[in-house]
Length: 270
Image (cartoon, rainbow, N blue to C red; front, side, top):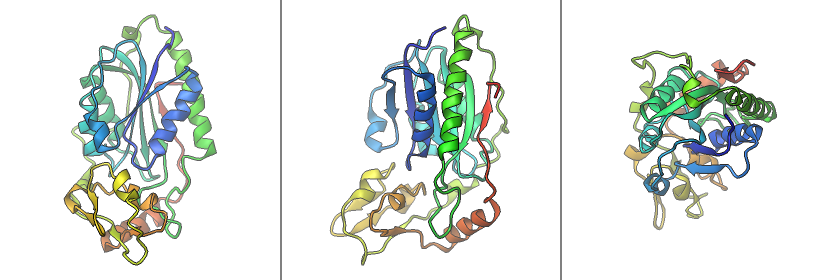
């Protein structure tokens, strides 16, 4: 089989998942790969035609060992007919636990046929300059692994007679899923009013429309998914975590998850 069309489908609040998918696409070397970015609320409403003969790369971050609920809900609008898929999760150097298995099961439910998978490392959502947790990742080494993965996947697909020839992709994880306890937290970043310029950037990057801008910045805590997109995109440093629990989690991750982990690849000999 030849890869003639490539589509990148992702939920990527802080851009790390998107970067990994783009690097894999670079290795596949298909001209004009199409992006289907499901991160922002307005993108979640777009009509997406069913997939058939394309190759797709589906990617999402890992929150507490699981896929973000918002990502799952947005991926559920996808429909495919045995379309070959590369499945990617990006986690903050702790562990990806059940997330990649969850993405595999969801992809099969939607009609995709997983051909390869990977768990890459990205800068943790809770990381700061003072409390680093995989800061700067995916870095150059990660990108090269992703590019090489794309090239190897292209070779694997060339060896297939048809999409049906791809057999079950083995992915680690547990079902029923055991991870995901952090989903129940109801907290959000706050805005330092003396630093905030009310520019609206935080609202524009929020994947759940939890932030509204009037004369000041207001956050609807129940909608916040703690992705930290507002913090990482604030040019004045006005969006911060002040909650003690979040600071404790970040400090624990900094102390216990500082040893560099490398991407893990499934379905491809590396």
